[in-house]
Length: 217
Image (cartoon, rainbow, N blue to C red):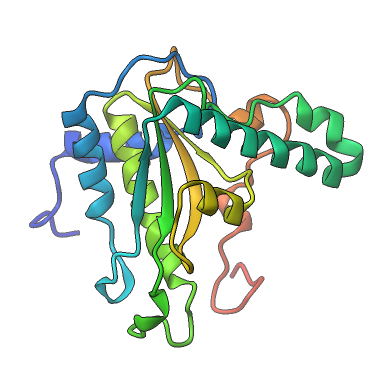
């Protein structure tokens, strides 16, 4: 391997550490995220790759407490609906903490903009690449937050149109994630759903195929 373009060993270790220790956080301790730091994190998100350079990410910073409480209620409504849909695991699900909207320092809503259909480059056969691009931006923000010592959680329990209406989004725009961001007492040693014995993470070996779907050799 050529080292001409590689980072130093310490820099590489830091990148892999942020990836390895990133967690979907639900427990926050209030506090603040200084504006300069928030802008740095959002710039990290803005450096994400996007298909056709369409940059289909929009972030709504939620600053009004009343609006936070309304978002919190949207999540709670969907939490109950999800519990009902889970059937036999409903009571177990209701024991999980699924959001930190009222506890975190910052709430951001990540959304796709209206007019996305005008971007054809890279989306003619895969129109969902706008969502993939937004997801890359969210992941950049997540990793940068972890490197800065801040927790972040991605909340997806909400009815999209209800949240879009609440934030007065134009027709065609779609919220994808409620992002809770801020200081935490500690990071989970494992993903929270693993710690809570809700699910087990699968090893890479089960998800990697060779030449044909399902083939491992």
